[in-house]
Image (tube, rainbow over all chains, first blue to last red):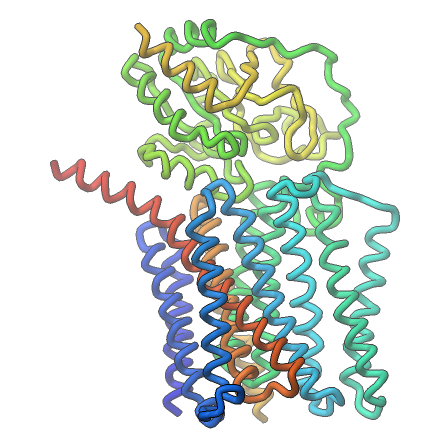
Length: 467
Length: 102
């Protein structure tokens, strides 16, 4: 009774936590509340009557010892990773954590299967099958997303012939495997093979579903996989008839879907389009004008900046890679001393995760008032003297507005090309993460500054200092 | 009967989850994703229950042990990294307040 009350309290904390996470002011408090809810739920499960019964003096048989040890090991790994990771590496770590959540549900379900290989109880066996399916897809999908984001494997969309058909076929086979486990009267050996096949195929399915999605869409994919891992936890709740798992998992599952849709909207793409189109794999029919982009030296760029009355920074993933946010802040301060009006235009999907740039700019202590959303900044763009694109690419590609054959056509962009002068800071002459040519680079008002973004910006800032 | 009750809870929770997320400013998308990701580590509760009471045989024990380890990484790491992200917003807001007061 008391334990069930504790589960209710935990659920309330989760609900309040998610609610508060949606507002800037209360977000941190919300995160703390949901952590508290988790702590309550864990303590409560240790107090369950059946669990209490496992306390024995025989250390090998003592459930508490093993559970405590497992929690300690996991916590230490979690703490070290979360503390050690640089802010730029944060998106891929979230992906990896999410994969572990899915893996945990998968292992849990498999352990349940070993206990109940005949699958007599219809509800339990159905839930077990679904948990294995969803958990396995979440696991391999998230690990692949992690690999793509950390550039351990190519971020490009990988397409192969008949991909959709193969995915559908795999899904059907997996569901059939789950069905064999659930249907009564089939012998145990067949059921074992069916569940093993289900697990293997679901693991493969996670890979084949995420593989054709380009790196630029990874944020949305992670959000969707996050929703999946919640569903897996919820299904696991059905296995052991535990309400807190069902509620918390389902909350994450549902809110994750909504969040995914919000993100898709920011990119002006439908979820189906995102999952199946192989974004970035198709190439624009326009092969570019064939012109070489004009490059400019730091010294000359400085002269233009010195005369500028308004400057807008457009940060992208390149800024995160170069760790240039503090240098950007420095240059912004110098420009302001020089009398220029400085703002930062943040595209909703700039970087590898929504809000990625906001976090980095906040880390560099840039005042909140200077951060402008895309909607705020676009009407003022023609009056801006200089737009400095720091490692952004697709989010300033005018092809999204003009070229109907471009894969990013229709995505809202920051109209950097409307500024009087545009500087693009870039490591080299390559394409963007999504692999699309950017016609901004060859426009008349555009000047490239090649080199490491951080070094370039530091050099620009020191030009101001040397006066 | 009990299963109907559980399904009922599931459906209500789904609607609640949809309602909870409506207008979220884009800079909070990442922390929100990361924070709810930590909640999905709730599977640790299930893993604990299974490990302690229901696991059968050495293999079942090992599997549920690993399940707890991975879920704990998900939970602890997830909450910490969310807090780190949010800390950057908060630290800045505090400074702004100080600036106003002085």
